[in-house]
Image (cartoon, rainbow, N blue to C red; front, side, top):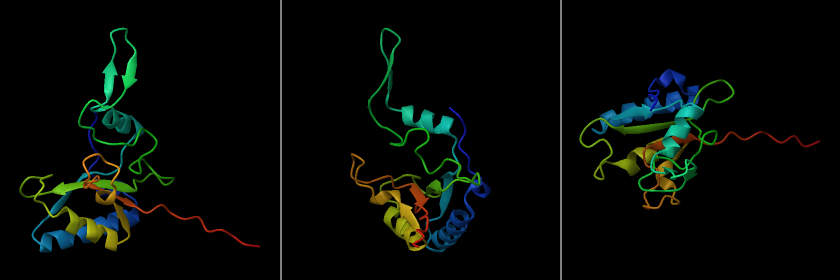
Length: 151
């Protein structure tokens, strides 16, 4: 398994600015957060997607299906963690620095709202995840809109 990239300098400048503000606020609120992972290669995304899914059959054929706890629903090339045109990640995952890093008693919604207020999409709002809690550690920039020129 490859190593997660925890360098905020590898994030899009807007996301880096937002992360800095949310970290300052979370520190003041007594719930400091830490960058778990930012920029992610397609190879690493494929590794994470395979967790809980990949089964090798008795004839050596690899099938992909859910076998238990999965880490991501995005296959390689689908994640906003991958480098954008400028080479920076537009998504990040975070965890809490104190207590249980991914604990149920952590203020996920509070931190998610901070990110949303500053212009991000928070994965905790995604209901398509089977457990109904979304992807709470995940944050990404809203997709950039390309202006439409009207003649």
